[in-house]
Image 1 (tube, helix red, strand yellow):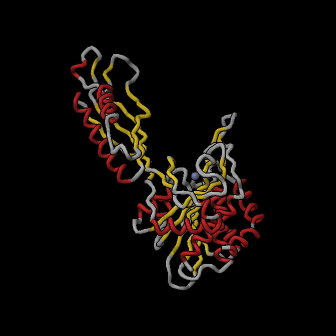
Image 2 (cartoon, rainbow, N blue to C red):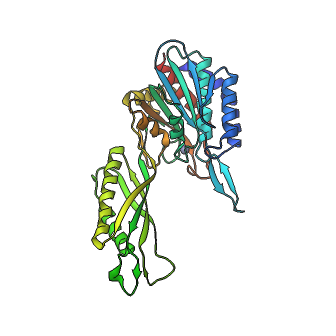
Image 3 (tube, rainbow, N blue to C red):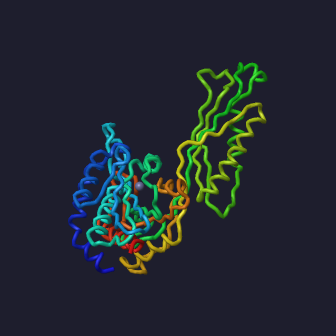
Length: 376
Ligand SMILES: [Zn+2]
């Protein structure tokens, strides 16, 4: 679509200015005060309606006034904390969320200024705290996703995954859960172990049971014990408590359910030595669940902008994104996720991360084209 690409070309300098400013004000999740104020002001100055639905979360809308679908685009706004040599915390946009906001803003501006919203609505969701894995939930709770039919996300990719000049119409994130297993035993004197129940013995049995879990080997999954706490100040006391921490991953949400059920079963191993164990699920992110019609819309837009040979197959990544909470909250919502080649190096979440900023121009063109195709 030459007209969209020509329009984006004219805005390249302004797009970089937006990016440079956002890059210069990195803020931690839920503290995106300057960031959200800038996004809000920039959109409002161009006549786009913006609602502040949480302290820093924004919903922008372009309404055609004609009945039709509501098509959403998510941009995350938070930066990451790092520690410098003096031991002080500082923040840095090391995951490219500054580029996602820039693409989100400019996609909305292009759709508005080129008059591409012929029916229905386009909704931009500028979400806080993706890195804290709760930002999406906070926006859902605030009603930001209500009434949406389709929802698109975008993330720049590391050079090892997709090079600059190429893009994929889906990024398959896995599900992850941080879990804890608390083992309860009975304290006793080290000289009279038969009067107690050693929580460490039970923890060892539970770990062996976890390491014996099998799901279908053709799927990707894992459960690892990553921390263990037990015992007190004295060596001659039988401990009555042990706490295990686990990092659990699965390629799909149904697989994660199966894994959690098997972890519950593994906890029963503690009973063999008179203890009990309970599984507590902590921070969790669901796996991606996309819809072919949305993947196709992104694929067509990528082919249009970059050429068909540069639309690479959907990518499986070990990373996660809380974008998928929106689908879990509303299973009828159709989604897809643009994986944009940008030569990001040395890697995401590295404070030295840099990428080809020109990738944002193609990102804006692809997203504008994809969203426009749904409200034509
Ligand atoms: Zn990220």
